[in-house]
Length: 610
Image 1 (cartoon, rainbow, N blue to C red):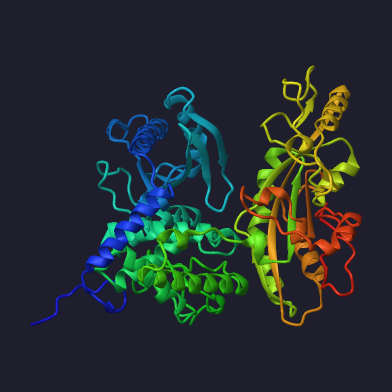
Image 2: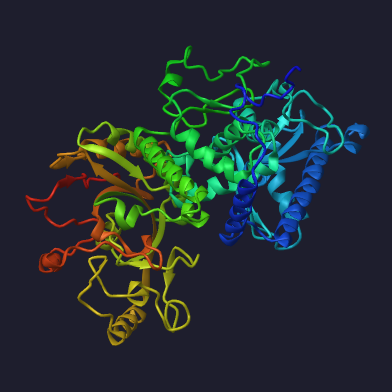
């Protein structure tokens, strides 16, 4: 009898067996654990998302109608049937969103509606047509790589992008426009193509998995694991949500009838042994109607440098993992090995699923030396732009550090730490720029420059400084030898309240890179790489010397600031016998103690952009 088994993906399946009772039970336990870990939101929250999307669809229709009226006021049929179509992409579209997830959303419109129209009309229409107070924090970024309007709608973050469909003057009824049709790509510019790509990729992934519910549960588990292990962040050089989704989808194709728990275990087994740079792809690379570049390492030299290629399934196929460096790849491999060992023990009943989701130890145990990349700005708005740019370049510094002989691994942490500070003079500003946290305040969204209110900074007779937040600081670091004295704090608060001006607020975002030294490395001079990085950032066209500043500092694990540790985590401490020396050399991020000869000597140039 002929085998009519469907082949999912580019190779036949490895196994097509149905789940055993034990595998079904393990999947049930996995689902229970994911519920305990709060990865699912309530039915009410999901209903709220659906209402938000229905509102956005209503607003999109009105938007297209207004443009039609303006451009062809005599064309009654065009105006009567004018409509847009709202699509989602990313985690919401994949069905793996959780509490607090944003909704990545795309508005499409007929050919006569341009991107300029979108930015001209849509923001004001949102304010006009949404219920009063529903839309907050609205920002339009027209010149982004993918132009975007960002806002919150009833507290849900929305990233709204736009593309026209240049081959259609009138859209079909709602729900009938199929964006996976390559013909709809004709006549679009690069930004429009990029805008359509998110939805096209997400829909293709869902079309290419054998069983969507199995895929979704397995992907929820892998996403939670990757986030807990701090290997989830495309911009920093780790896989992002779509990449993890494609990797899980490929495993689903190889085990088309397996239960979700089996897919999770097989994910680690298959991916830890994957023969990189052989690509992970969900379907064969196909031709399309455009004269555009499609991923092909045989033709394009730069494509052959991708270390862990994961290829998007929608035309034009691209590598979604070009950001991965040698160091981040080594960390991913290490985590896949760990995941494989743990899932083997979970399947054998020796461990529970919760053990897979244990948090990383990046700050508590993994490194002795760190680099702190500190982006500073004098206004909140300027800081959003500057810190976003610096974040997008951290992986470039990591790539340069990979080439230093004495560095075995340079591991970037997958998110930055945002802090606000109040400073009264240039010296304090300089200290903050170089990592000192003594002037840190709670960011209350107040004005950047604030006068002290009559009865204290926040109207309650209390100035929120580090003195109020815990132990007294010595050069920006907690001093273990002093207990915080409420009387001392009171005096400090009174002194501040006596001043006529509290000072200027400045903003920092710090990215940490953990360093593992090569065996036998006694010293490490990174000043060349650090200076090149700062010089590159300083040459950015939007860099403003009076608004922006960048420094890179060396930090030892014992000098890490308190806010990188969560409650219950133990901060690394110096051995007791060095306590006296420690007190003498107590240091901030910006002023490491003089290295003793016996210690590894690490230099990161402190010269900075600014």
